[in-house]
Length: 172
Image (tube, helix red, strand yellow):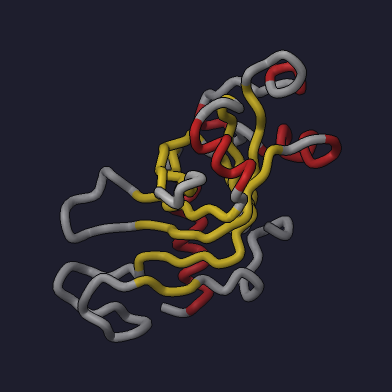
């Protein structure tokens, strides 16, 4: 296993899962997490829609630094698989909104209905958001009770994904 395998592992996890847990902070410094249906563009960009009056939307409007995790809840105990990230998030507008609408909800295998600008602008209560990752980690893949091949560590640990080493096809 190499560092490039970690990026591939992260992309595979993102492609296989539909929800991420978004972490924000309220004005009093209290953490708030919420699941959101997402689509990713490579390993850096995560898109979702939410109502503007949702607590997490209000939180990120004031404090755009967020954390997120995408985890595979279908695996057996001690077989954890997850992608973690710290990011800066914002509501999208203009050309960035158009770009986001091309990415979200994406993936034809999800049978999701494409959104239009009208769905996320004007009087609609929904907006399209993007979190742009500054750092990404994976739960280093390893068999239970065995050391991981990359670090020889025999317990759960995160491994940083080099976002520049192995871009996804198309520059993601």
